[in-house]
Image (cartoon, rainbow, N blue to C red):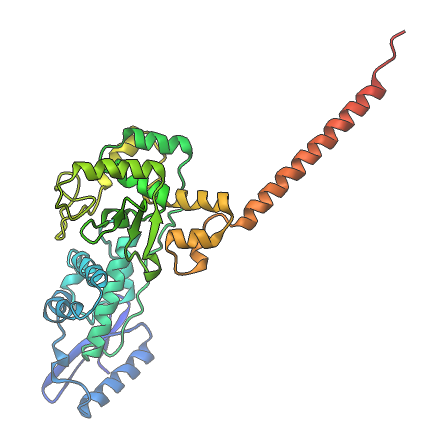
Length: 359
């Protein structure tokens, strides 16, 4: 047999009809690897594999030759941009220079991607689609099961003092973006994509249209609060009449997107967060969680929160304080008050009976 070991993974290396075949079995067990090799030889002898099988492209080569054009077949622009972002991150890693048949779950788990776990998972999901495409093109016999990074849930909330401190230290456009997130439950990215050209702002109805967030359910008109209405009125008055975006990007406060709207205000937020001396765990997304948590507590109606948050699944809405939990809290507060009254009455009763009579 021509199986050999490489970093704990079994590899095959053999020649049939003067052609050399070499690659990873993606297996650690010797007997399973030998069986894999036998099956591979059988397929080659029966001409079930394409001629180009022996020349496996590098990941960056496959991306340029095949995957970039494949991305354009998606109808959704958001999906195309998602995978383009994933490709950008993948090309910045060492695995971009590896043959696609060498990439396995262990290598991916040890690879560091730019930014946090959420962005890393974008790269991993993109890689999974790439390898699936490679399998369909018969460059791979099997697609590895890639494990995504653990994402920390953005469940932190601002208390009223923290919210006031952030808004006090924030500059534009962060101030207006934060107000919409705090009061209307928008995701920060949704705020920065508000389009004037498509009529997403209706000052007569005092509402803003949230257009295609993560799911179609996000398409809805959301009413403006009084302070958001005042802020948006001032912003509209300061913009050119032909402005296409509510938050156009000048390149000073963030990257200039191809469409011309602001794409990030992380630097502004981090600076304001530092000046306001806010806890490290708070991010701008926490303002959205604060908004939806407050609405749940005040209304006790998960349907309202689901619509406001643009959630597709009710389980997502349940991350926010459930009305049953609010009822439980109120019940415990009532029990505590009743107990306090009983204790107080008992104390007064004992005091009357233990106080000596004055002669």
